[in-house]
Length: 304
Image 1 (tube, rainbow, N blue to C red):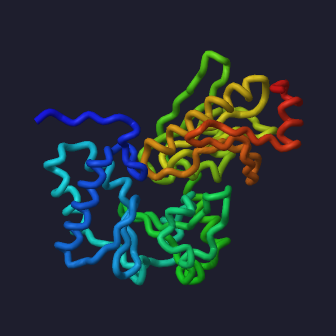
Image 2 (cartoon, rainbow, N blue to C red):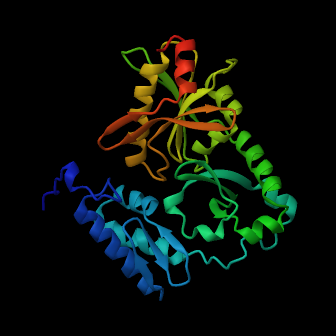
């Protein structure tokens, strides 16, 4: 039987790397696999929710399936189901000392619309519209979000955030790439398998040091963090800023719709801990939003 060909308009909206038919098959297999485990789940386009309130995100599992022939999908999904749903009442920290918890704590960016239940995370800090900063425990290749009671149990949000940012700073160096355009713009990308790669924008000085050794950034940077696995940065300093902004917008949009863990399709002006939208990207194009402050900066560096 010939492999079915499909066009972009036939792609599933929630899982765009699958066709509509493939996504329907995937969801049917997920529901069947969890039923065999005796678990009832409610299906949504991009996730399922268990009868105990926990959530199964589809993107990573669907991406794993997409790498293999469809005949292997039932086995891949069944293995995922065998591991089981994460019970939100589970004590993820059982047997861990406070010191050990802090050693495995990270700060991570997360899309608000993907939160299983925002009421579990009242401490979440909005970084930009639609993106919050959560505190996570990363241990044995699994991530668990700190709930409100966990935050209080281990010293409060300030203590955990300081530890989480410190651990982001010492993550291993991943793949670095320079992206240039004929128009003269260029930016650098840090990418890798870690789910915390894009969150390194929260430690901007360390990230810039990795991508632009010995460079200063008195005016801040343009940055895009389209998904959890990559972040693009350009130091604002000359007339190359505007063509770079256009290229970063393309990078951000493509990285949001084609990679696991989507975050933001937009481009931001980041200076210290302040984030300001300068390009809002969507399927219909890019809308540039220059505040008076950013316009003045563009004139100062000769980019306007």
